[in-house]
Length: 569
Image 1 (cartoon, rainbow, N blue to C red):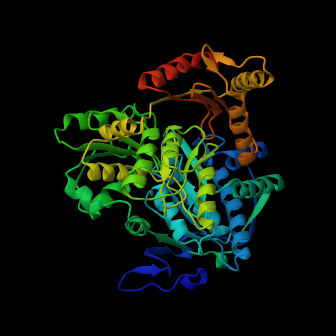
Image 2 (cartoon, rainbow, N blue to C red):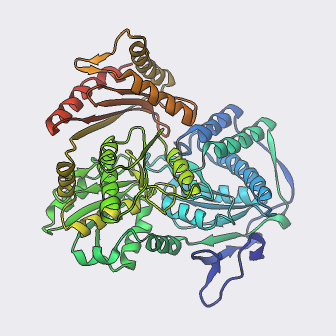
Image 3 (cartoon, rainbow, N blue to C red):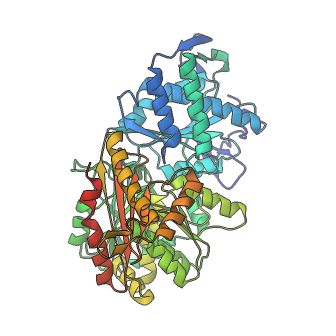
């Protein structure tokens, strides 16, 4: 293949890389010869899958907060659907390349450790090749933030990136997502175009495959060095200080892509870690929640080091989990709060705090005390990414952007969740202040006079009717408050109608719907009920502030007692 045809220079023999004429080099591994795949020329390929199933999956791709996810092997995630999705992506890539004055469309492909990803790769690769697209492929399982950083690095070469991951979902799920040249999860305007392409093909009942002489070889790349150099260029993590501080780091990848990056990154900087084995454990999928991190907690508590911390990532390493020295689970809300504090106080950075509507208002309270602006978005990191990109397009940047499900990013970095950076910043904070995280957190709250509590839960509901019934119940609560019929949700909990309605209107402006129902109470508490955008669940989030820790905890406990009634169907 002529490498220059997609904008790359020729390989530099002594370094074995392809220059991309930007910050870093892209390691070149090998190309798969075109004749290694058998093609028989142009042919009309019939769509054998049920059209309504294709439309349902395409709608999921365009409306989900983070791509299409379904149980692998089901009608909503099989080889035929992956072909059709790939054809839709190829058509988008062709249009994007033409709009940017390039003749050859290029799609990058990478994904996680799941069976669904590994078995779907050949299907997707071949479909893209037969559609006339050049494929850049990351063969080894790759963390989402590392792939996103590569997408941003190759922003003038790659039209769209296919990210195969179901993130933190149970292992039986597969996931199909896309990243933009900004390194962000594809926004609605892109996913809707791809979904429309897929539905059009399904409705026509066929698509075409290209002739053999138009097939482009696959270029395999390794984006790790690009990511490692990006972290160094951010200058937010003092690896030498972490190494010299004596902080003992325990790491749990939960069997995900962190295995292929975090230990390698630590070794690159001479930092020793204790990595937990991926033996069979009773895990609720590769999600770094408190239950799944119980083994990590046990290992941290058993160690007698003075400074120690447990760090974890989810299946694609875009989310984080943190265990304090005493084995306590540090919630994602607390990690985002600690990150804002660390970047502002210890790194001297400024900029707005961007958070989703269910992420802790503790961030707002801290921001108010330090004259830091805040921006609140619907749930889904693609909405936070929009705010990050807007800030940068206007010559600014963020302080931190995060969501309570365990994702954040930082100034100068990709506009996408990065669980690797998140856990590194916690180690960096400990190395800086020479104290366990829990003590640092308590000291900040005491110094700032902040008293807070939170709780979150979810209920799995496969029936759309059951989900609708719960949401209708919450809509009625807000409607009754607006009409003046009933503003008291619970004894002592009066709905702040103006604030609740104002917030609702802001969410509608963002995404065209209210993203659930959020109630603000006059005592400072908040309650959010919404349908998950990635799983068949309804989620409930409670956020409470108070004049004392006891008051904040009491407010939270009172609302927790109402959850069973809320979720009853």
